[in-house]
Each structure stands twice: as C-alpha cells, then as structure tokens.
Image (tube, rainbow, N blue to C red; front, side):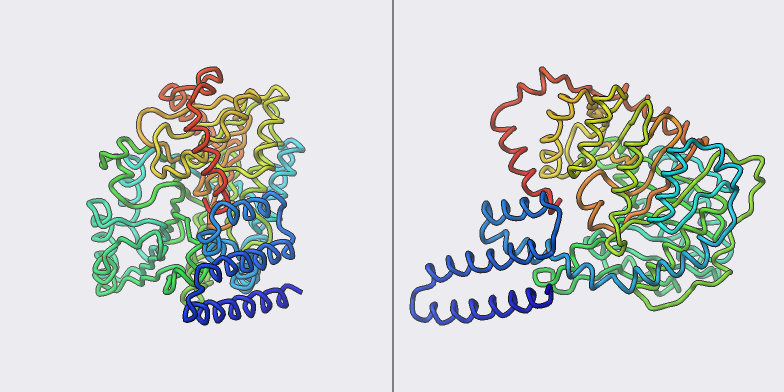
Length: 504
C-alpha cells in the first residue's frame, strides 16, 4: 500500500511540474503555483496518514504545511519521509543485531549482582538489553570527566600510549588548537604503525578544511565521512546524522559522552564562555560494546569487515575493585524502536524518589513530557537543568515553550548561568544514571545515531550527583510567578518555534 502511495505522490508531482511549465509559457504561473502547493500538500498529508505515525507528529506536519505552505513542502522532502529511513537502514539494523548477538548477548554475566537489584531496576536493564542487544556489565570501570579540561588531557595521554589501534567517531571536529593537537598525535601514531581509523559526520564537519583530513590520510590514517550529502536539497540523507562521540584505544580504553573536538569545548570561544559538559572514561568489558558500535558504523560506510578478536578483547579487571554495573546502548534510525527515548521514559517511570535531568536541547515528545509531570505530581523531586543562553535560538525558544507546564506540575527548572550547559545526563534515585550523546529532543529520539552509557550504583553515579549539585548552585531557578510574566511577544515566538519540533 505504501509503495502505491509513493508512486502516486511521484506521478502527481510530475504531472503538476509539467502543468507549471506549460502555464509559465501561457502566463498563468501564480494561479498554477497555488494549485501545485495545495495538491502536493494534500498528497503528502495523505502519505503521512497512511504511514500511521504518532498523531502528534501528524498534526505537527499538517500545521507546518498550513503555516509554511511552500517551505513546508521542502521541509517534508528533507525531514519527513519515514519510508526512506526504513529502507535505508534495514540492512544495517540486521547486520548490527547479528554482530551484537555474536559478541555481546552470549557473554556470561553475574547473576548474583543482578539479583541484588530491585525489581524495577531488573526490568529496566532487561528492557535495555532487549532494545540495545547489549547486557549490563559488572566488569567495567568508569570515571566521569567533567568538562573539556578533564577530557582532553586524558584522551591525548591515552592516544599517545596506543600500541595497536585507535578508533575515533565524532560529530564535530574543529581545525583549531585542540583539533590540530589531536591531529598531530594521530599522524604520529599512524607513522609508528598504529592502525588509526577516524569516522566523522559529513554535516557536523562541513566547515572543516579538506586539508585537515588529507594530511592525516597522507600519514596513513584511515578517514571516512559518515553519510556524505551530495544533493542536500533533494535527498533526505542530510537528516540522519551521526551524533556519537566515541574513542577506543587498543580495545582496552574507551571515551564517550557529550564533548566533540574543538576549542569551544575548552571554554576558549568568547561567545559561549565556559563550556559545561560531561564525558566518560571507560575500561573493561563495556569497551567492547563501544568497539562494536564503532566497527558496525565503520563497515556501514566502508564495507570493511573488522569483527575480529584482536579488536574485541577488552581488559579483564579485578572484579573485587569494580563497583556497580554499566550498559552501553546505541540508538538511531537503524533501530526498530526509538531506543534511547524508551529508555529515558523507563528511567523516569522507575523512579521512587527523584529524577534529575540535564539537557541543552529540551524538546520532549508527549510520552516523556507526561511521564515527567506525573512523577512530579506524585511527589518526586523532578528537576531540569538547561542553558540560560542559546547556541541555537530556534531550539532555545522552542524548549522554553514547555517550561510553564513543567513549573505548573511542580518540576523545578534551573538555567545554568556560568557559561553554556551541554551535558546530557539523567540521574534517578542516586542509583541509576545515563550519560551520553542523546539530548532530550525529537532529533535524538528519532533521527540521530546516538550512544549512551547507563550506570547502576557505580562510583561515576556518585560523581554525577555531585556535579548536579554544583551545577544547581551555579544556576538560576525559574520561579513560576516571574516566568509567567514574560511578554506576549516572547510567548508567541516560543509557541511558533514549538511548531517546528519535528525538525529540531
């Protein structure tokens, strides 16, 4: 049925295009363009209904067509076509599941540790394994790297110690001081015979000079763009971006979290000031999970099969020195389910005492928004930490459109004042935490390739709690009475940008 609709849409647009060309010659262009807009929008809306999307998404698209009749048409071609996503990533999904089932699901884990969890926590980690094909590990050590000042020295030190391979996967890389410093280390290691592979997102690194990677290639570094965009105004490939930040060194040490590579992440860009972010240093079993995510992404773009034991033998740690469990989960448009969104939702509804969330871009769907409000109305301590200044104004104002109803439900909203807050962290009951690349927004839930670590009673969980407490002190808490006095112009702008939530 869907293929029939797609064919009908294509033929209809073809006929209308021919009609416009003929009418242009006859001097009737304005009236025909109007007909074109009406017919094309009708065909697209019909397609959306046939796809049986979430009703809120369907209504949002209809509103976009109503408010932006011409631009909305092109927005849909770029961002709205679900069938393109399903077709493009079906093979990747199947290959990823096969790889994870081979190396992850079959591994033995500590049943005694699992039995010490509460029933709600057991259910969460079973859900995470079902969605992400990766079980919880009780042989993984982690350490929170708060801000770029902690991440980059640790990262560079690990890169310099590499003996066999270095694998990097980033959304944004800058040709600035820290970018060049890491480039120099990678070139040096490649010349020493270390295998170096660098997977970068083609859109996130649009501004990066070609020379940056050409110099690395000349030294023997294997470089690959993820999802290159050749015809951005025609194809929808531009919409599915690799937002992951992963580094694996010799299969023994891993890094993941919110920090890209650039001077702004060290607080050196005046426009942002201090950059508040969170990253994770990983050793032990879960490094293999990160490695599998990288290797599957690498093969998707290069067709190079690297699922070999030399890359998948993590360090075995002393179990007596390990505290708690760690589970690495990849989310993206190649998943059957909206993996990260469902795990965020499960964390919220599993809470017994408190839910603390940090997200620079807060555009939740109805499920997550309702779960947060119900938790707060039930007496839980629910807090949201967001930036006080925008780096993307449209997203910033769309996010603030949700604050009034959050405050009305008793949720405490804090705006970080000491710079730009970019952490993506959730903490539940001081026991369960998530740290990674996924924002609390539609793009991370439905479109981007993301990776999050879910932590249970680890030392890092305590570190995240302490970071939250410091961040709240460095923030301004919104007061409903004051926030509700903002001007009608600001309210209209917030509501207007909220209409664009399917695109943000």
